[in-house]
Image 1 (tube, rainbow, N blue to C red):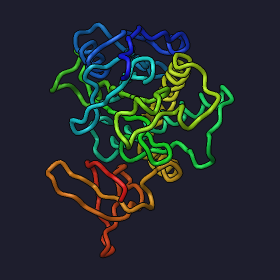
Image 2 (image 1 turned 45 degrees about the horizontal axis):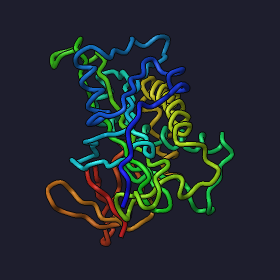
Image 3 (image 1 turned 120 degrees about the vertical axis):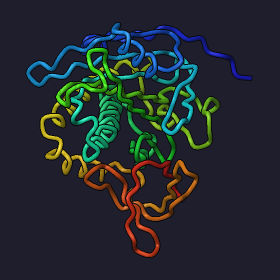
Amino acid sequence: MMIALKAATPQLPRTTAVADHVVAVDETDSTNALAAQMIGDGSLTLPDHQDGELAVAVVAADRQTAGRGRNGHKWISQPGRCSTMSYAVRIPRAIATDESVNGWLQMIAGLVTLDALNGMIEEYGAAPNQPDCLLELKWPNDVFCHGLKLGGLLSELVIPPSSGTDADADDDVVIVFGVGLNLALGACWLPTPQSTSLQLHVTGLPSFGEMRDAVGERQVEGFRERLAKFIADPKGQTESLREEMKAVCWARGRQVEAHFTDGTTLTGEAIGLNEDASLILRTQDGTDHTVRTADVGVL
């Protein structure tokens, strides 16, 4: 019988030192939902861009009672074992709503998360148990290790009170990036056979609290740096981001099946990403298909 773990307010001194605003609670339904609520009622504000420097706010909880993933999926986590943090960043409305480039915002969130995890592992002198235990991204929003899901990301657009539906295209909106990571989850706590936890693949890790804070600090800095570059030149950043994704895209080169929201499926080889960050799926007849919204699983 598993014992229910008690939630405690996250202690995040390193994250607090670099973020513009940190909200930490022991429990909430969803850190993304809490961030959106606070942005909407004006209790969580982000200053304007200063000399290209982006403001980043963090909302963290030890337990989520209704964590959300893409397409209505649930995100199950355990307090004291799983990091559940959301990062809110001001983005120009013109970029956030431009379908030719806004798909890269989700890819950037994934790259920021990999950078943060790998940086934390290196800082503490930890090492993978096996040479093939690399951290990768399963398009469009999962962190994978050894072919198993270690984490998930969910990005959502929030309109701040100062803006409205008829606001000018030059106005800012806020993108909230929710990041859930299984950092110290034992094998008996894994929610599905397809999930995993960092501690099962890496030895020499620090305590969960230290991991969560070190990763949070790096994610704040990563979002600030990467998104500032992207906002300055979204089209110019596309090719370099595609190259980065080649090295960490778990689906690339694999036979996968895309499951669409209308119940249909498409099977083929994941070739790579288009210029708008959509997935290229090549079917058996040699035809390339563009996949923009789907759950993708390996065959």
